[in-house]
Each structure stands twice: as structure tokens, then as C-alpha cells.
Image 1 (cartoon, protein in one colour):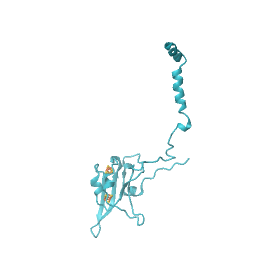
Image 2 (cartoon, protein in one colour):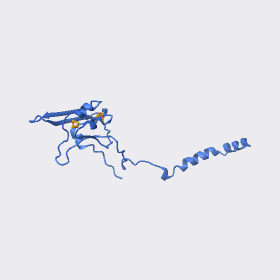
Image 3 (cartoon, protein in one colour):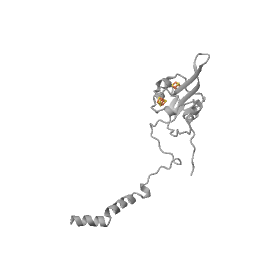
Image 4 (cartoon, helix red, strand yellow):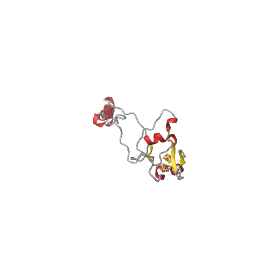
Length: 153
Ligand code: SF4
Ligand code: SF4
């Protein structure tokens, strides 16, 4: 009897039909989840660490960075270069800030080391560029942040 049932299942392609049924059952639009990026931007995890930002004071527009070098010292990849001059009171004034994104592992140690919250790893995730040079961000880029293309439907 069991052999007859097995034969009928094979002859009528029941296994194939069952597989097709399972496949088509999941083709209903309510079961399909496709992110419509870049038109709809995805939600980023709260603790995601992405593009670096060098913060400026919201009122004075002056950099918050005091050129202390602590981020540079904290970085295991040694990819941050801080340039400064001394003013008449012998205080450091930031001149340049270079950040090589291509070597960054987004560990956040530089951000944690900053005593004045000047350096921050933001939730911006679009870091691709067409050249290696595009991965080296200067002070202006770090202060202004990336400007990804905005797409509209
Ligand atoms: S996130 Fe980590 S690897 Fe990247 S610059 Fe900061 S300390 Fe260096
Ligand atoms: S640790 Fe902060 S204040 Fe010091 S150089 Fe880095 S970004 Fe500037």
C-alpha cells in the first residue's frame, strides 16, 4: 500500500506541487520586504558609528576642537593628523584636520578620547567614493559633513 502511495505521489508530482505552493504563498505583496533605498532612507541603529564629524559651535561657528591630539593618540590606526599653530597666549589653534576614512575601523576610540566632544562618529553611512583620495577627509569636509545625492520619485 505504501509503495502505491509513493508511486502516485511521484506520478502526480505532488512534492513538486507542494514546493511550488509554498513558493507562491510567499509571493504575496504583504510578504515582500524590499527597502526602496535611496528614495526611502533606512533606519539606522541608535549606536551605529559612521561618518566622522568635527563639530563647530552652533552660535559662533568656531571649531570645538582644541587641537589636543588626544584623538590622534587614541587611534590604533594612527590615521588622524591634527595641524595647529600657537597663538600669542601660547594656546593651540586648530589649522588642519585630516582623517583617512579608508583605514578607519569605526571603533570610536577617537570619539571617546575627545575631551570637548568635538569629534563625533555620526549616523551618516554613505561613505563611498570613486577615488582613494576621496577617502581622505579634510577639516572642511569633516565640519560640513557628507552631502549624499537626494533622490525623488
Ligand atoms: S574610529 Fe577608531 S580607527 Fe577610526 S579614527 Fe577613530 S580611533 Fe581611529
Ligand atoms: S581629541 Fe577632540 S579636541 Fe583633541 S584634537 Fe581630537 S577632535 Fe580636537
